[in-house]
Figure 1 (cartoon, rainbow, N blue to C red):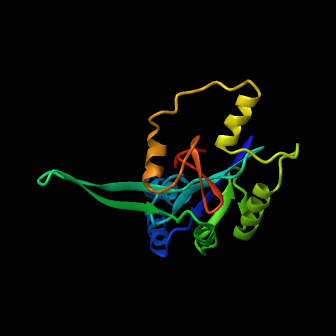
Figure 2 (tube, one colour):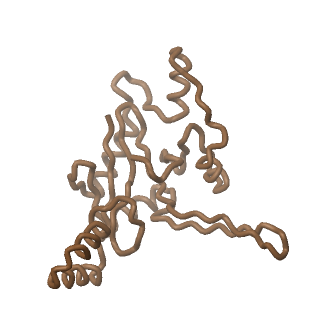
Figure 3 (cartoon, rainbow, N blue to C red):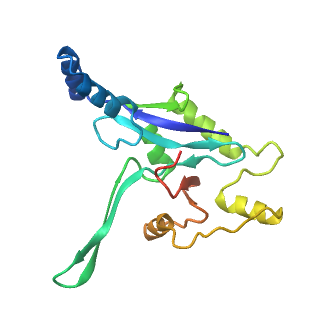
Length: 199
């Protein structure tokens, strides 16, 4: 069993004022839409507030961070000159480094909570995750990542090969200079999913 963690990005003052106006005018649909966008909808990637998935902690596994690089454009094709023009553009909440992620989590407008709605202070969350990753599993073994789990399954005769060829997510991360295997990769010692829409 695992636990998902989220960051709630508090709305800016202007958005809160807009919500107050909608309440004063009894605009139920507007209130409902704005509250969903500002406070509860996971995956609303905007700078006006919203909720993003940070990652997941699962028994026996290293913490799996969500990279949250939510929009990726690697360039355009110049039809006139018949050539590809690489121009990577990425929209993201943080770089895939401890410093950048921890800085994001400690922002004044970010609140961390788990899937049960319990809020966790940023420094407590960071400490918990660092301890989780550095502590061996109950049997003394290192916690799994995608690659070590597949190796464990092979060694115990319970591995069934599945088709992983052509995984577009892994291709994207390889283009960005990472080395994904088995649907995860490491950056600055942290384990990341190749997906940004998992839970």
